[in-house]
Structures are given as structure tokens and as C-alpha cells.
Image (cartoon, rainbow, N blue to C red; front, side, top):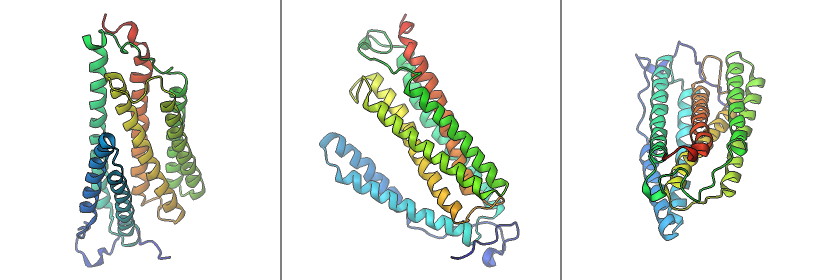
Length: 281
């Protein structure tokens, strides 16, 4: 196995007279866009016409793009030494902006939920939740999932701290526990969905509920995959106390998922379950 490149401040830059990384032309952005388009269009075909193969093709294509692109980035960062300290600063800014854009997605879902719940229309008899909707008990599965995610935030922080201290064993243990907790959260949410008193039907409450919680659940799955990649990279020795932005970005993303869930639990599960007593009056 090729040893990782020197990740200290003194890079050779392979003949470059600057510390910046000029990215080579790549096919991955184009293939990723085409795969995402196929996934989106295929989802519409599946939901309206039960044509599933376009969506499946787009999903498989997106996974292949992710694998190929990740491999290229790992090669650039770990073995070619292109991710200098200056490059890492720009990558941190990019990750912060990406998380900020994700925050705005959830702002839209919360906006829709609060608009519908604080100003219920005559179509739902001016009450929230709408008539016939039986909400979840917030202190049952939702609270269990809250504890699971909060614990996962602790374990990923433990792993990050162990990495900075050079304790590879504790880092791997913390990562493994975080991944296990992420998978557990997804399983509990799937069980919760399967036992919902309201299913995937028309109406403002199911729409806002499933869009907000389902979109978050998708982020948990993405974050879990992110952490799994980091786990195998850590096993391969790709991370050092001074050079581990890939893991740092995954930890930031996971904490973002934690915080969003706290807002979801408070607004949709806890406040929303008791809103019917005061909404519309």
C-alpha cells in the first residue's frame, strides 16, 4: 500500500510555485448531474406511473459517481498531498456554506409546518392537527430517537477528540458507535413510519410531517454513509492529528443533523402534539 503523503505545512506541490490546488478536469460533476436528474425524473415516474427502473438507474449511477469521486478526492488529499493548509481553509468555508444551504431547506419545511399549524384554514376546520389525525406520542419513539442522536453526537465528538490526541483505537471505537447509533435511528424511524396512524396520504399534515422528518431521515442516512467512509479511511491510516478534514467535515455534518432533529422533535412532535388545544382559537 502506498504511504500517505507528507501532510505538514511543507508540501512539495509537485513543481507548483503556490500552495493552491488547481483541480484537473473531471467527468464526475457531469455524470453526477445526469444521475441526479434521472433519480428525480424517475421518482416522478415511479410515483405517478409505477415505472421504477429510471429511478433505480439514477440511484445506482449516483452511488457510482460518489464512489469514483470520493476515490479521486482521497487520492488528492492523502497520497498526492494537494490539500495544503490553505486549501483546507477554503474547504472548511465550502463545508460551512453547504451546511448553511441545508439549513435553508429545513427553514422551508418549518415555514410550511408553522404556517399550516398557526393559521389553520377552513379546509381543515380551523384546527391543528386536522380532524382525524392522531399524532405520535412525543415521549415514545420520538424521544427514544432523540436520545439516540444526542448520544451519537457524544460518540462522534469522542472520536474526533481521540483523533486529535493521536489515539487511533478510541477514534475507531467512537466512529463505530456513532455509525451503529445512526443505523439504529434510521431503523426506529422506519418502524415509527410503519405504525403511523396517518399514512402517506393527501393532506397538509402528512405532507409537512413526512417532508420534514423524512428529509431529515435522508440526511441521517447520508451522514451515516459519510461516517462509514471515514471509518474505513481511519482503518487505512488516512487521518492524522494534523490532517483529517474529511473526518472533521463528517463530524460537522453529523452535529448539524443532531441540532435539526432537536428542532423537529420540539416543533413537530412535542409542540405539534398539543397544538390542537390552542390552534385556531
